[in-house]
Image 1 (cartoon, rainbow, N blue to C red):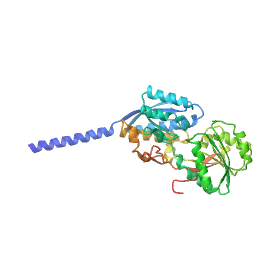
Image 2 (cartoon, one colour; image 1 turned 120 degrees about the vertical axis):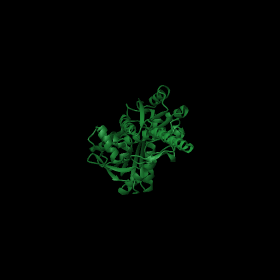
Image 3 (cartoon, rainbow, N blue to C red; image 1 turned 30 degrees about the vertical axis):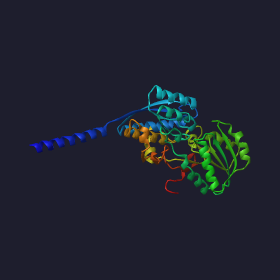
Image 4 (cartoon, rainbow, N blue to C red; image 1 turned 90 degrees about the vertical axis):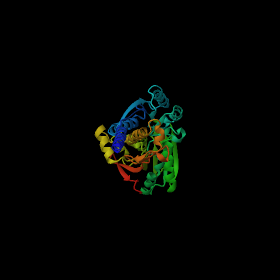
Length: 362
């Protein structure tokens, strides 16, 4: 009888533990995240697509057992607006997680605030996420990995021997695009015959380009507003090669032209997998351009970190690694965890086409 009671007690404990583990595993993970986005102003196209990526991730994560509330605030494409809505999300809405702006200069003032308030800040663009450790993370496609795309361009176009560089004056995107192009150009012996850098979001490109066109460069590399810069080059009858940074996508989808303005132009960008593209287009009626896949992965990363350590998701994020919809996500290697490769594209008949795929070792 004693043995029977012991066996029964053992079985009861085993079943109870198993049931409790199953219940814990199946429990819904609920959390709220603040979102600082420039929904109005110059960055609104990018922010709108990024937010769509967040919404799609929110929907998909619900099927995985997550109940996520996104509190979205408009920063108005200004640093002061970013600071204001960040403070509102932290002080009034009491969010312990903030997803930051789409452009780096809008995020710079948020880095010390996140560290001071002990709030996890993860953004698609940050100047240096190391400055805000352990609370600040960069979830966007790493510009440090873009060099092979520009190197591939020079292999395709050995006739290019000289270039000029035009870039937006911000350290997180414009400077890094500029430096990547220069490294690739230097490695192939291409001479830089001119450079313009401006902090004006919508400068008068035609006057800026007059002197540069007079240098008769073989190629223009432009990391700035795509439509205005391309129109200026066409008006000046520049007939050489044009390479745009990934901002070119904004021009292709803005509706301000039929796309033929960009014919023949090369650019570097990431490439989400076909299943993600299909799902995104079915939901929103748009192709997944302007990096909504980055927003998708940022929310997934945050959700998995909260599930692992609700009290300190910033610690859990540092051990996170998984396969994303456009490339590897791995925060074990540092606060910048998106290792999506960049590819080289060319616009033909108003539509982008893949020129060189670079995730297979080409």
